Length: 119
Image (tube, rainbow, N blue to C red):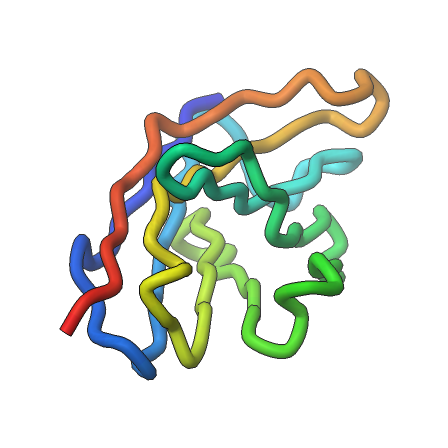
């Protein structure tokens, strides 16, 4: 399966950041698969943001839950992240990734997209 992130590279503070992950080589409704957003701020480690399951249910990081929404478009085989009320601290490389839950934490990753929050 291949994943490709897309979205704006620059967002102003207080705006909502929309990112799309387009999936090829597999369906986002495939049983046992979880579709995830992860980010890495400059100079820091990876931060798991949230996920949408093959069933369509979602789960979010408690620290980001109030600002994060993950949805999907099954017709386009995409899943979408929306992060609201962004600040410069949300500047990061954003990755989409997937795993088969039967195989532990063996993720397949997109190449990542840089997002900068600045006025």
